[in-house]
Image (tube, rainbow, N blue to C red):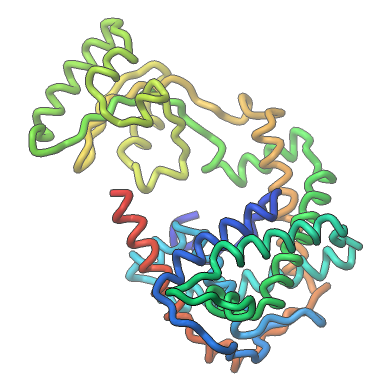
Length: 366
């Protein structure tokens, strides 16, 4: 799946610990909302989508869009950089897909009798209270609870809490589906093929040399050839790594990295090396700002992955995603989209907040 098609693909990814998801969402919302002005009342309560009695209003729809943009950096990056996509149209369609799946999954989970226990409800309420207490002070003012949710999320406290309760129900239903999944070798093969880009992997040892004012690329290529010759003569890789590399992560891991096909676009030079090299082969790869000495140490294919916990977990995910996709595309639940309300929704503000936030992250990580 290429980057632009990934924007159009929507699967709700669930965390086993729903409280952790809430905490992460709150932290990001705080970052996103740094420049907001206090909102006194909610507007935009027309229903945009529904499944049976379950409804999504305009404000909830915008909240969903913000949640997606909070969590999915690569989606934001694709929207931000692509000249072939209309970012507002794409995120609106993505959010509609999210709303559709969310409503159908809540409806299905409730039909299957999934509910929250008193202890689970109590844990959620404690988390809601903690989040409010930790973030209620804004610009010298103390927000009351209702204003807190309007300020950070643009929805009411009851809408926010109901969403996370429903999300918890979805999570519990997901666990039921995972536990009933077929994890036979044939099912594992299907999962491996579906998620090949995330599962097939190359283990490589890497020495990174960075181009800078003191080291031109030509100088580093000469240096890399010398290191390559030493390695081919039997020199210790880790020793040469420590002598020549400053990357903290590589030093910590003795230069060992896992490379997956999903990285082939952002690191095409490395991908070209690993997919054409034999085990043990040493090569030099250069990009605009780096020169790498690489050694291909191992390849992890289906035969090496089958029956491992990694592949079994992905097989259960495959089962859940297929079950959900079949359910969403079936006529069991009618997803009603109010076209006039949908067309009138403007997500440009949500997008701009996301762009501003992620620009600061990308700049910090340069």
